[in-house]
Image (cartoon, rainbow, N blue to C red; front, side, top):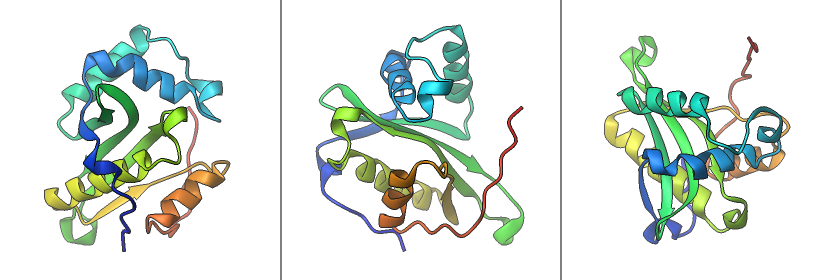
Length: 158
């Protein structure tokens, strides 16, 4: 059962990202334990194309937490149709990041509560995510929200 924490969501607006948010989003991706080795903090044509692809895909949303005009958190959600679970749609949450100076203050929990509510309203049967095993704080965070590590995820870098 999902557990909502805090009241941060009352002060912050959650919305789909626009092109002007891209520098803040990219900075959050790069300012991360693993992101430092695979992302860069400068918006280039690769990020521009990726942003356009996500924005143009009706099953993908790049959601930001906007606190008084400042982007303080981000996530991507992909809605996946499927045959399993009797034809259920699921919401896959990825690339959850909170700006370093806002961590531990409720922005991440509020953003996750918002996306869970959005998935539920859309009729999704479940919200799923993966977190890198090296991100022990992230795993504790998701477990604190009620997520369960019920599966072992696998990836193959290409």
